[in-house]
Image (tube, rainbow, N blue to C red; front, side, top):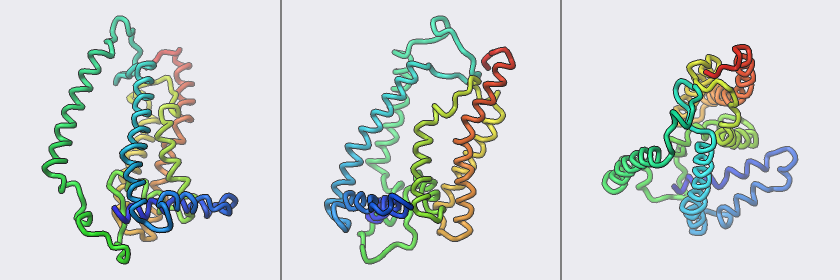
Length: 257
């Protein structure tokens, strides 16, 4: 956790390597603000703790609210991708969906709290039980498994600023994903181009996650660049695929599939 804070607090300094805005030393200022000084201390711990228990949950709550609004406004798709008559074939969001999702949430929380209260050590790396030593840098500092792909993207790009941009662009693409894909064909079963790019996304994501567990050698850095390109290719291809599929849609007389 200590070294995780060290690495996270130093990420904004990548902005200072930018050609023009780097002279403003914005990254260094943000880094000092995050740490509450020039070194990691109690203030840093308090700020990171507050970030995780107050600001991030609030942001997630807003995003969940937007998601629910879009679900209510656009409806839920089905595997066949066909449009349905909501009045004849649809069901009310409440109580059908609320009870269904509520049951899933209760099941998840039961398993979650079981491990939190009784077997939490199964999910914590052994290094977390050792006291942090600022004078002894670990040989390989890596985040949790669900952040390894982003970590690989950041470290695989030689230029620190470009790595910072690519790292954040990945998060932005995930946020605007529903708006990148505007194809009228809703089922992936009838979208061969989308299916191919989706396979590229899955392979790239898995490879980047695996590479994040390995040392940063030149070979791993090159592989990281290749799979980073595959990851970005998926997001950048979505608008192009959507335009092509609009042509197919119109050529077939506008019948949704």
